[in-house]
Image 1: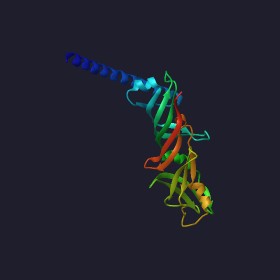
Image 2: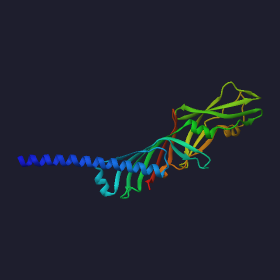
Image 3: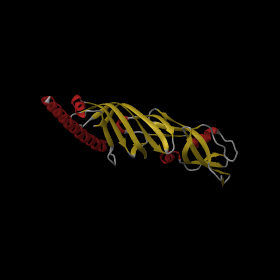
Image 4: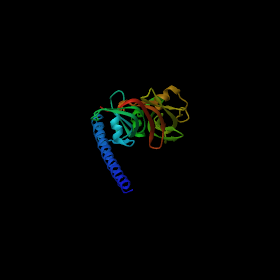
Length: 246
C-alpha cells in the first residue's frame, strides 16, 4: 500500500509538471504566432491568438492543432481600386485543422469561420457624394447611414428642390448583401420622393444604391453573409486553406 501510495503521488506530481510545461509551451507558441501574424499582415497592434485543445504538446508532435482563435482590432482592408483603405472592426476567426512548420514560420488552417464589423462611417465614405442632379431642379446626396432594424440599413438622403433645401433628410430602408465573396452591396427596397415629386427610379438609385469592395482580408478569407446592426454592418467570413502565418 505504501508503494502504491508513493506511485500515485509521483504520478500526480508528474502530471502537474506536465500540465505546467504544456501551458508554458502553448503560451510561448501563441506569442510567437501573434508576432509573426502582426509582421506578415503589417498590423499596427499585436493580434490575440489562442490555441485550443489539450494537451498542446501532443498536438505539436502530430503537426496539427485542433483549433486556433485569432482576434484583430482595427484591421485595414483594401477597397479593390487601392484608392483608400477601409477599417474592419473586431475581426475574429476560428480556425480548424491548423498544420504548421516546426519553427511556426508557417501555418495553414483547413477551415476558418469568423465575424467582423464595418462601421457605418466607413461605408458612408463610399456612399457620400457631391450633390447630384436627379431631376429637374432637384439635387441629392447621401448624408447618413444607420441601423434601420430587421437587418436593414437606413440611408438618409439630403435634397435641394428648386434651390431650397428640404428641412429634413429623406430616409429609405435598404437591403445589404454580399456579392462574389468580396463586395458589400447596399440596395434601397424602394425609392424616396423629394417634396412629393416622383422621379425616374434609375436616377434616384444612382444616389441611394452603392457597393463597397473589401479585399485583402487575412489569409485569404472571404465575405460570406452581412447584416445591418446597431454599430455597423456585421459580416460573417469563411475560408478554406487559410494561411495563418508564413
